[in-house]
Image: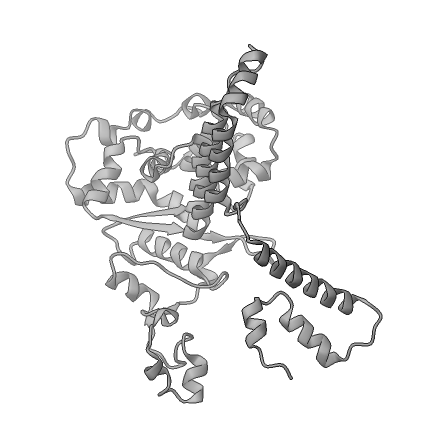
Amino acid sequence: MVKRSLQASLTGIQETKRAFARKGWTQDNLAAEVNLKTRQPIWRFFSGRPVERHTFIEICLVLELNWREIATNPPAEFLELEEYTQSPVLDIDTLVQQVRSQRFDKIQDQCGILQLLNISYPVAIDDIYIDVNILEEIESLQWLDISELQKFNSEEFDRFGLGEVDQKQIPGIRAVETYPKLRVLGKPGVGKTTFLQHLAIQCNQGAFAANQVPIFITLRNFAQESKVTNEFSLLKYIHQEFLTSGISDPSVIETLLNAGRVLLLLDALSVILGIILDVGLYKSLQQLSDQFPNSHQSQERFELWWQTNYSTWAKQLNTTIINYRNINHQWHFSPEQQQVLQRYYDANQLLLDCLHSNSEVTPAIRQEIKATLLLPIKELEDREWQ
């Protein structure tokens, strides 16, 4: 039976403290890197006390240490991973239960505890979770003809796109059971992450999807690590997650995925999109930088390259900035358009000066200026002035 906890030896503690000092972190920093809600396991680790096995391994990985060299009497069966290296091909149900057992503690620590902003101590998710109801249809994405809109009464028209107050809702769990692939939308703070963590805990404890392996991934962490490694591979990232639970064979993950026996929960999808764009910008700028000859080796060669290639290189740089930041467009305006833009600018500047001056401006006029400032010219022309 593999031990659920590990502890550092005296020499291991000295080695980890040196590695910790090289990082220049605090214990809170290290706890955040290991995705812990509290630094108590960090304190236990450095004081040579028993620590959950997956936490112990993850701390060593973050400190770039071999956990086997740090631990006191690392278990031989875990060291050699007999579960996978010496066993024949496992039945899928047996494999699922084996992986669930090895991942149990990690999921409980990862998703079972929340750190709330206004409470100084961690809170168990089961103590605060409230069942959520969700709408199956996104009301704001409906398309209606003008003739259909004209049939609405005033109350229906005001609420269009917001959903009816009595619109049919279904429990969140039932939605997950009904749809094999599901994207949960909602405003910040409504409980999307908490809902995913609740699903992971319910699956982990066998109350829901007991025949699947729960995997909870914070895409913010995945994207940040991918920026460092310059490699976007979710499969490899999951493999790193499994390593902290003693599962080193990458085929295990692929077998589970191919059999549809994974409950994959991806949190904060919107965060990753901006980071991916940043990575693309970085790569493009790096490629432009690589075109430069080494000016330290030959200044004449660099100047010759600049005279010959600058124009093409500058256009490539301008295109990159436009593609990734949507700025630096080369707008071309006719003299008439330039005059219109100048008048528009002067008019808005005059209104701003009026607001900031000591001249007497009635509240109604002041409100009108604020409401129309910087509006498009066409809208100003069509506006009914009182």
